[in-house]
Amino acid sequence: MTEPPGGAVSLTAPPPADTSSKTLSAQRVVPLRRPGRWAVTVVVLVVVAQIAHGLATNPFYQWDRFRYWFLRPTILDGLLITLEVTALSAVLGLLGGILLALGRLSGSPVLRAVSWTYTWLFRSVPLIVVLIFLYNFSALYRTVSLGVPFGPAFVTFDESRLATDMAVAVVGLGLNEAAYASEVVRGGILSVDQGQHEAAAALGLPKRYQFTRIVFPQALRSITPNYVNQLIGLIKSTSLVFYVSLLDLFGAVQTMGSTYPGDIVPLLLVATVWYLILTSVVSVVQFYVERYFARGATRTLPPTPWQRARSGLAGLRARLRREAAV
Image 1: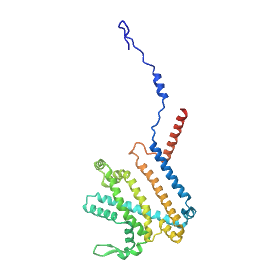
Image 2: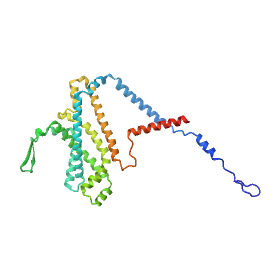
Image 3: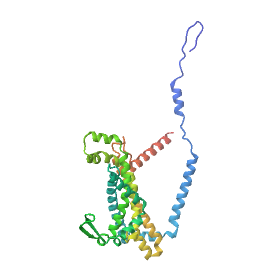
Image 4: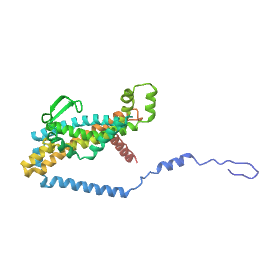
């Protein structure tokens, strides 16, 4: 705004908006340079390449023998036993963990004390000790009976017939797993907001329905990832059942290694790869189970790996088109 002679006021028009917009559009946004990230990336790639080169070229690994043993019937039979022991122990451990967690949260001091003592005991004793103790249980109790304490027995079992190698492995792993699963389940139940308990009680629902329909489904969002970690540990813990004369995957590898001492390394690689496959399958199942229970808790479900891959490819194509346009 200028004031010419005579007191008249004159307004000067501002510069056209096109000029500033053209200037901004001509400028190119340059991303922030991160030399440290690139340096670390290069170092990691070099280390990974060195490891891959060593695995591929070192004759000590005997990859031809690895291919020979990988699908041998002895190895597959051991793998089936590992899967069977894992499945039965996981079910037994989860059911026992739920009961122990409810005992810890019970209003009865006796149930709380017994549940806490059980959890404390089996979390303190090594699993191999539990398995060996159960394997030699018949030396302490030749018969197992059900009846009145200090009174007559109604049913009597021969312990040596009940305690097969499979039964010892499943019971030992299941008892140990229940102690850890109880803390996972208890933590999941405690993670549910107290208002949910109060709302369920206000509706007049019985305690059983409050737990099965309202509390436990919400607790599963917290229980699932933690218990899957326990399940992965259980898969690896099955390697200990070899010490109670059950030839699982590790037991089969150990036996074949004793028979063919020159193939110990490829046999250990076979066991390693099979354990990697099993834990990877469990991890994939964990992702989809978590995604299922995330419904209603998040506005959008987390993308699947396939969706992430498609999104990444779409972003890369869009970036290349922008680069080509510039």
